[in-house]
Amino acid sequence: MWQMNAPVSKARLYVDDDLTEGHAIHPTKEQQHYLVNVMRLGDGDAVSLFNGRDGEWQAVLAREGRRGCALTPQQMTRQQQASPDLWLVFAPVKKARLDFIAQKASEMGCSRIWPVRTDHCQVSRVNDDRMLANAIEAAEQTERLDIAEIMPFALLDEALQACGDDRTIIFCDEASAGDAAANAITRLAEAGSIDRAAILIGPEGGFSNAERRQIDRFQNSLKLSLGPRILRADTAAIAALTCFQSVCGDWA
Ligand code: SAH
Image (cartoon, rainbow, N blue to C red):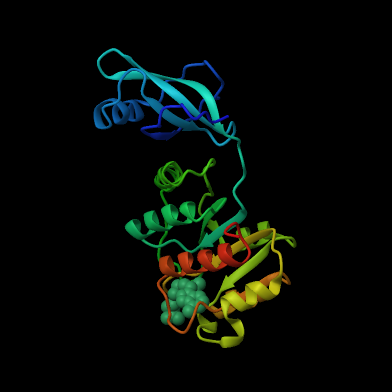
């Protein structure tokens, strides 16, 4: 566990390798470049590592050659813990705002980020690797111990079916915008404890009526208003995540 005299970590990295005391690992070339050339770390500097399985470790850096380095885990600083079982299911938007959604959903603690095709969705392809890179970078920054799972672009129906009967579908519907009875905070508070949730955000073009009927058929769907203004999809995603995390999630 954490020791008072442990050196302060100068960087925090996600790695694939298993993390065990005394077993040196070699981070990727990009990570080595970052540590050695960007952060200018040298022998003996401390770096935090996590891999989504083995908790967080403090490792010591040893330079190798002119550009490389190895990292040897020395002590576990935090036990592994899971993020809330919270999905963000959303109709993807174009590049920079898609990066933004993947980053912010990770920062807000989503366990799964799932882009879906809806009737009015304008985007036909999603770069999974780029979304994953954004999720990893956000996890490194926010000190979470796992990486949000990035699901391949699928049909809305597939994500709805995956919610099954035991996951609350938090349906952010622009048609309910401003409906006081559907106020997000009130609805979530009334719903009581929610162990598994999927927040559903539509495309810039909104949901179709057929989709509304399809979603309403799920008994465990909860229709929400995020206030009287129509928000852009990325803003709506963050607003909904904020409401959920503060009322039902891990902010308590
Ligand atoms: N073009 C649509 C707006 C879509 S906004 C229209 O003009 O009606 C994109 C998505 O953000 C919506 O599908 C919904 O999921 C969410 N959203 C935006 N504002 C919202 C609000 N006030 N309440 C609930 N959901 C909202």
